[in-house]
Length: 328
Length: 292
Image (cartoon, rainbow over all chains, first blue to last red; front, side, top):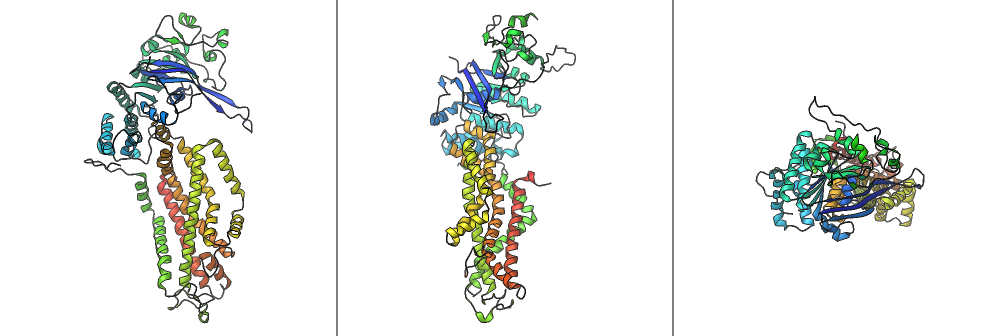
């Protein structure tokens, strides 16, 4: 069995209606039936535009949000049913790296306190050994140990993200969900952090879910790619294959939007009309049909399932007009 | 905690240390703090060394002006005013400390619980605060003093019990915004216990605003006690407080100004000092809020 199995995962949020008494409740289907598998040691890139539910998916997988429906199996353990102390101890095995390293560290704690806290909380070290372990962790992420007594506000964004990564590694997790770990950083720092993550993954054999809206970054780091649109996966498969011949019209549009650093390079940019529809009231049938240039009347009625692409057996696409899309 | 012993480890500057450095540069706040220290020492020591008792009357020497015998003069019953002003200061400071402590305990726990748990608990708890805000506070205190039968410690308690509302609101707002911060989510994802998160991470991060509001709450409480004593509802003679001394002084203020002057000056000085210190602390703990 795969290391990470996500089955029909749903996360719905209730939002209050406009009514004075909060009646007329509406539901935001941020994640609406997502399934995928990931082998041990692989990296899944999760892409999609803002508000498509990729961060919610990451947080729901790690039980930072309670799933509405569905299952998440990490190394065979169903984490969606764990409760209380069992959940707390199990959290060791799956950790998260957050987007904004300025917000994800407690401003009143030194590097030592930040990194030692999870060790003490899970009784992983004796207090006499904590210092050595913290130094080791700092070394792993490339922070000089002379910084050990400093506070977060004395570091740059890149250094802070290193601290956050070290903290996630402190518990020796097997799965890491990285929620846009470089998008808050300067471009010059981004590649350093990305390389660090790649190195760590190789050294420690981590399995990783890498959430991003930057396709260039995802292409660089991930083995598999899942493209999300409005709470559902539109296309999912090995990164190479998806990049070479994107099947879903939405994936095509996304990939055509990657800037190429060559002024003479001409691509046909596929521009999408309009904003993504509201997840409170998603379009009927295929959720992408109002913005899709291949859509016909059936697309508004039938919701396509995520099926294996006959021409690329490793890839799954949720489009009922895949043949028509290919012909054009 | 293990002792950190690393060669050339650079000492970090904690936010507290940073704030302390900024506070030291603020002259008004430093002056305020010094005056307060002198005042506290004064009210503790002076009544013991004047040689007079605060309640010992000498009717032949009533309403004497300041002299070498009586540095501040005497009141209408011939009691040494210096002793009485300093003794009254004890009560005023005590009410400031006790009532503020009571409002701190109630306000911080109320606000923390409401802010951290959110949802319906939050809504219910804060609506209670809203309703209590709508009540005339002084009437409530007067009612409580009547019920408590004029025991001064119960009076202090009553003052604290009506002054916690703003504290609860401040803390609740802080906690509610901190709860949604990434670092709290990160702690949850690491499997850190809820109690640890609340006590070790959330409450310490709300301390800045709490300290600032406390320094501004103390003068409020002192003033409220002075007001109640002025109305004759607070401290009862021969016990005294600055508010009571002022109300006694007002009776003869045209002919004999000093029984009004001295407690008035001391009260004003204390309130100013606390306010300057509070302002300084606010700027020091939250550098973004100051203008420069």
